[in-house]
Image (cartoon, rainbow, N blue to C red; front, side, top):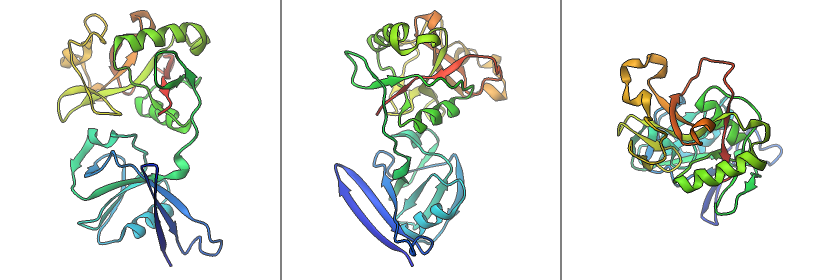
Length: 262
């Protein structure tokens, strides 16, 4: 038996699901609809696609599928697509197709209270996990596990304020570490973008350090493993942007995520 209840509050759409596997205890699995990822469907991290089903059946299938973290459901085509990844706000657009009628849901339990350092002049709180991570996607997940998301730095003033905080209280012993941030190449528009809002980063932006992005400007220097460039902040570059391979093979490199609370 499947019972569903949709709840709307504070701009959040929740889908509560009671399946046969939980009916004996009367517990609900609650899913939150992320309205920023609407009318698109991601093409990455796909576990399974189910045709001709209801939204409740889609949620139940995700609940019973090992590794399923979120799902897209199209109410027009009645298609369900399961994913082993939690996309951040606006995050599905990087590898996606237009899909009118699609909605994106993630477990409400994946939302964790975020705690970071409030920096005067900035709207978000920031934190740097001590865990090293040599892949951009891994850095994204580390921030998510701590209730945050990879940080974006929209202007030079933000970088300067972050640099001051990193050099005092935020970074501590991590002051020499390069930091992953929430930007990478979107092949749909062949440009660097901020992953959490889709805003482009022009190649002549003052956010880039001198002669950067060098990998992007020299595609012949890239291998199959480095074709998708990501972005890091480098302390020796005054924390300005540097393009970087999304999967770094150097296990000794000290790379940490720069996270912010949404």
